Length: 218
Image 1 (cartoon, helix red, strand yellow):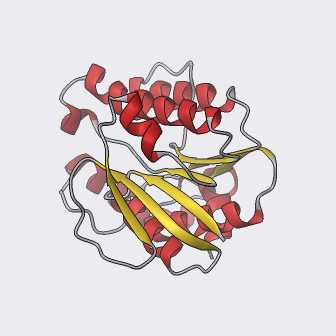
Image 2 (image 1 turned 60 degrees about the vertical axis):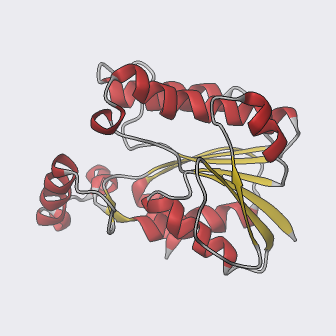
């Protein structure tokens, strides 16, 4: 019976992930680290309010067996590239460092299709640099998920994302071969894939592109 720790639990994929974890008997407890009180109630759910900028606050909360990171933002929501990086890179690395120090064996993280630490695109470069830093920490098992456009009902409307999803869906069946990984994927499918991979616990470094995630989440 394992204890899962989740950051980014209130987001699109994070919400599905928490639901999937709570429905799986493999996990006896699901600890969600949040900035403010969370209304969800479940016998196996523990909601912990933390300051993601405070290492002591995080260290007190990060105790368990499997760490899941679904945390992320957008440039528009963050306001500046600096603020965006503080979330997507800063929070992930701060949490991963503590998890590694506490010998939590598994770290699972959502990144993005096209992530590359040397990309000219700020978003993809930040995602790639975050991956690079986490992979260097040496968890027993490190699992990076690189979904394409995430499909599902968000709390807020994002025009650019909506347009991208529309185009991806329009040309869905034209995306074959090496382009297949760019097909849109349901956030619920990504969540199911993360749970399955965590339960399999295959040591080493594993990176899953969107098409592989689709197969895992079925």
